[in-house]
Length: 93
Image (cartoon, rainbow, N blue to C red; front, side, top):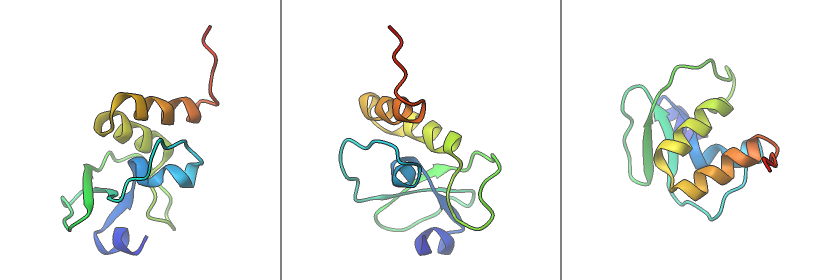
């Protein structure tokens, strides 16, 4: 969280998944941040800031941003597993 605050960004994508109890297929060593200023730093994956209202006290992206960033950045199956978890694992049969 400190790195997010120092970058003037907020945690998103697979890095935010544990905060929302979303499935992750494997660990990602990089920190995924959404930054309006572009961000920088080693071991950081920068996503564009979407602009949805977020938590005022924590540098954490809202769930919709987390899923949007996952769909645009992660492999399809991994993004799908996060989205399925967020919807309660809907059975669409």
